[in-house]
Image 1 (spheres, one colour):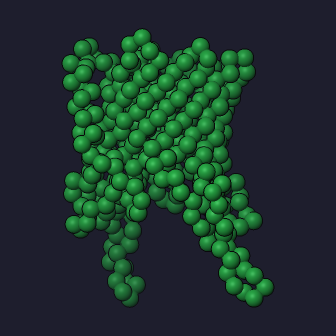
Image 2 (cartoon, rainbow, N blue to C red):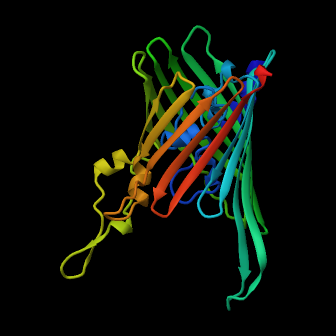
Image 3 (cartoon, rainbow, N blue to C red):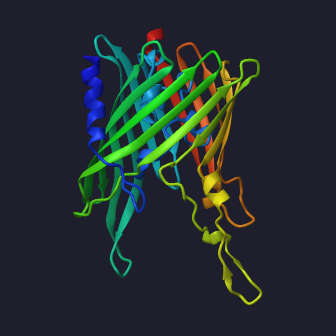
Length: 339
């Protein structure tokens, strides 16, 4: 039965080709989905202790420790935009570990206005996804595999679109050496219905995280390489342009090193085994793309902390984009087994 369930989630993904480059739709699928992940730089694909949200990004991280846990995450995003996640995991006899989650984003309300600027009411915009996942531990090995299926709905004013996306993930765990490596291919699929008849690619990504826990030191390192499907990821930031003495614009010089570093996210967790944790991370691409010339204002930096109790856990994070924008995250996880 468990093999049938895994095939149901995984096989459609083998028949669909993920697309890269150009504009994509349903970009909310790649937003950070928990305070822990946000504090570590925004993207982590290995297991995070007691994080029920983590299988949304890498389904292979679903394991028995998450059985009967439920969680809610809320992010106060830019302006009046907000988004959130709900997640639950359970072990079913003859099937194994399954996962269900809901992700949504609310863009707020907008004014209807004609060409003269006269207002005629308001409209709203939102998007969401229902996520079903399954994971399997390969017997007598340190390898875990998993797959997600996502049913997506987008409603923008009177327009709507639906989609079907898939994730596949691998996780290698060596607890004796404190090493974990996670690899995912995320959000490959297709639009089932479009806004106005034009199909757009989904926000496909290939990402890799390496994590190391130091057995005799109170911290854990995370190194993530994102968007591996697109080697040349950097682009010119016009905010970094300069002028020569004649007033000619000199564009930012993008080098091979720039492309390399904009794939990189670094994170560190202090006291990973304790009930109180402190986390910090730096996202190189965010720092480069959102900063102003000579005025970085901490763009790309993230930090947070967590408190773990017997029956539940609370985590907070703040992600800094630039001097005008940042996001607060709060995640609450409840262990229903404790009641």
